[in-house]
Length: 403
Ligand SMILES: *Cc1c(COP(=O)(O)O)cnc(C)c1O
Image 1 (cartoon, helix red, strand yellow):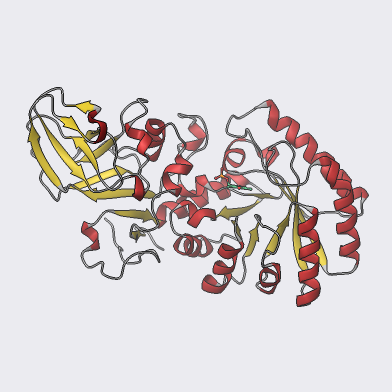
Image 2 (image 1 turned 60 degrees about the vertical axis):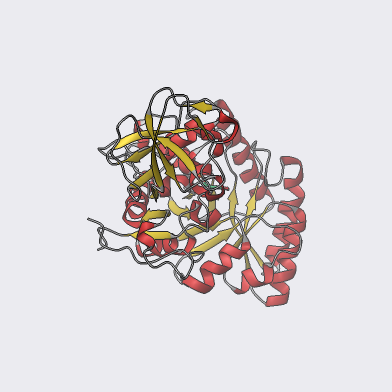
């Protein structure tokens, strides 16, 4: 039984009386806690960083962070400085470390240092700006050097690492900069045993040697996101950085048993806005691409792509997306629109306007579609399905087994 249904996301309107009846994102905080326990066990000796970027993958930064903090999480990771600062000012996780890693020149490094945030340095300019901010604030900057070992994205390449390591060592000698971390990100960890991972680890070990030669013995090395945390202890190093698995979703190939312990935390709910019996051959939605094959009952769901429902789920022909209505599945028909979509409830369906609709959620006995089903229908990944659930939709939080 749900026990609490109170807190709402910051973007929710203030006129939400009866919000239980509206389209909404429901987040199960007990599931987040459960997933963190699973990850804590999987991580072995390594520390666990809960990755909370993109508003905690759409689940809500502060409620998830609060839950993780209460569950003993000691590290939080975010891409953006603004999220790190929000964590520090609104949550004040005194005992937890916060790392932020995506910066552009002019980033608010002084505020980050003043707020006791660890910063990633993935380029020479960033090291200089962080050092200047440390001088200006009188703080010691805790820096994690990011190396690109084969992801081809963020971080210094092997050619740039020697001068960066030397510069970091000389800044460390002044006492203004402390190199606390060396880290990288894997490109192919979602395919366990992929040879590219082996190559990346070899380059990471080389990078460790470069730092050591420069006189830096780095205490924290980290590589693993969800996939490597769940599948390969050799990749755990000192700290693991699971994002997706924190929310109960798996980056591994479908059916991988190592994902079965996770519980999806997000449910996307709505209610039928209209129900209508139509004759065979009735065109549905823009372009009239879908025509009913028989006399049937159509239901109108007031959610669309502006709410984050992937439009491709209706147009790409990868197998229709489904929703759950009154204990059974109903397929999405016709193109998904900006704020509405149509489902075929089947001939003679007795569903009524106002009846509850679940687009996706944890797989239940009744066969509720999952974010993974929606991702497959849309030709995308669950990361995108949950993180794009519109911030304008109200979030409701349940916590069934708070202890
Ligand atoms: C997003 C991200 C993670 C978490 O990845 P998941 O696959 O969601 O676990 C870890 N590290 C970095 C650098 C990231 O950008």
